[in-house]
Image (tube, rainbow, N blue to C red; front, side, top):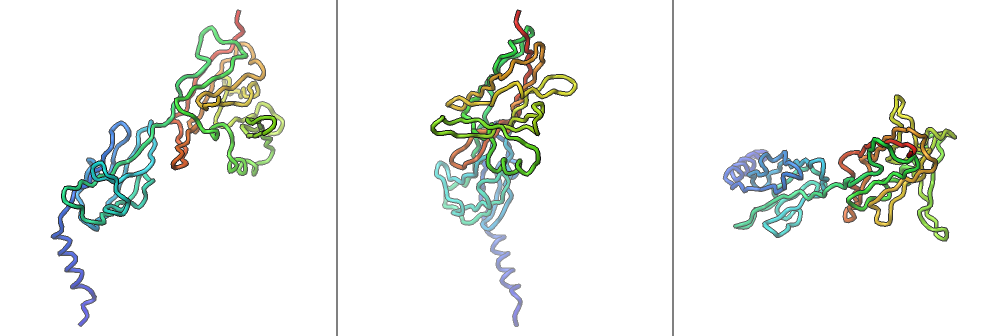
Length: 275
């Protein structure tokens, strides 16, 4: 009589029950994040087990990918452990093959430090700064041009809205022009100008937009310094607030991944004609 596979199931359960468990470690630096699962950064599993893997980076770091190692030797995904995704902080890991004697299987989250703002200008000064002073932001890494210029996908999305007039700048040469869109305005209203990832406002009850007083933002050749030059001097006595959005990013080229700032950079200054 056919037992419907019950005998085989019982045999497999007994074999699984008698199988040894092996320690699998998750190695990481506490300053870069925390392993939520497995608790304590290690787990004991048997071959064929599948278990969740969850890593949470701190604000100053971004996750790139997982590696699987035995000591200093990197192992292929699926050789002993199989990760459902190498590029997600939260994934599942399946124990594929019994490790050789003396092996210590380790999972390591590889992270990268986010870019940050090193300095901003003008600085807050009770006496104020000349109203024609340029805004300058220094970063600790080379930043992506996509931080200040719209991508084609973003342009296509914005084109679905009515009444937008794009603002363009040539970042190439006269012989080889390279026009990029850095902002737009709604209709002919200069007060409704928008720059990508940048706000310059007057600190008052309505947070009046001041972008009409400024030229297109521009990076230096190394792309670690951003300058927003004044087009028309600000009104005397203007209290200014500048916001560099946290969407400013650098590019991790091997994965073509954008790594953004951990937070927006916001600072005030006072524009005043000097005596």
